[in-house]
Image (cartoon, rainbow, N blue to C red):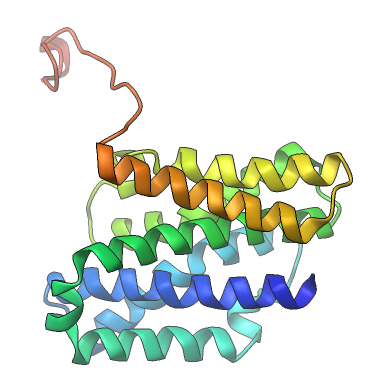
Amino acid sequence: MDILVLVLDLVGTFVFALSGAMLGVRRRLDLFGVLVLAFAAATAGGMTRDVLIGATPVAALSDWRYPAITLAAGLITFVWAPLIERLQQPVRMFDAMGLALFAVVGTQKALDFGIDPPMAAALGMLTGIGGGIARDVLMAQVPLVLRAELYAVAALAGAAVVAIGHWLQWPPAPCAIAGALLCFGLRMMALRFGWQLPVALQSGGEGEPPDAMR
């Protein structure tokens, strides 16, 4: 199971780094800025999880493979940005894949460190969405996970499958695969059909702030 977790974590790191680097290219950052954004998007969630569960030094800073993978993804995006830009659907698919992989890996790692299943699921969700939050905050925009179709909800659903499987003492590998498939499927269906959670209506009308807040 340790090898599976490592492989999933590295694959998720690569696809999230692509997502971060692509945003940097769209905002016309220089090479250094693109690489920094790729690293933040790929590692912020995992680093936050590792600090919270006491897994120090954090893997993203102590294992050379994580910086190497984010560097490679950033360079690939910087050099071939026009090609990647044309592949919008695959890029969205990569992002959903990264979300699913990080959610299940984050949950499993928290469980391995003795964290209770409910909190492990929350940490798994944080692992999945933390990089996206860091990426968007660095670019001074409202984080995608707070306004997109079932982003954090999909991560929590996938993480919950792993946590429930651990509580029921089911084999971890099938639970991780099932959780990743559920998260990925929910995210892709939300993209396809525009699913999203309800948005609160304010007194000034839909999308309008109330008079007192203007």
